[in-house]
Image (tube, rainbow, N blue to C red; front, side):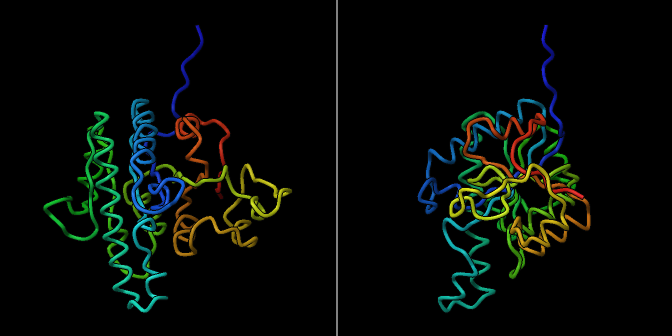
Length: 241
């Protein structure tokens, strides 16, 4: 009898971009894209893995681009944080329709629709088998949702950050522009910094490096890829010490 593979991780943080919820257009909320994401998350939860999700808001509003159009930067960032809450609720809805109990915790108080972020409560939800979605970024302007992911992963004791993208890992140059671009199976934090490979923004990346939080960058749009990563298959690029 063949042995059933066991998950390599017991607690993961999945970082989703807002654009991913917008489907191929990357704008608004695409029901099929959200459904597909929810199915992949349910698939790994059924393996007994505790799942935390941090979602961006770029499909609705991006604070930095708002400030370039004349909106005051802090105001634009708060607008972006509210966009992440909309995305969090959409993902929660899709997960619960698949029978997965889910809680949204927000870094910005909005008690009618989300719990406040409380670390111990989040951990308790995970222990009870619930998926926890962190919305509202860090609750502070000038910080990205990448930084929120790095911060929350360390706070709740995740073993890895799984950064979902549309490419199958980290390359030495843009694979869309350079057909000879080389993909890394593994790279160190220092190498990634020296080569200026934009894995995450610098604040988030420093936080991961200082706390030895591994990052796996992988293609989330290939069916069952999240499950493969969790089972330890060589998918994407591992960034580690």
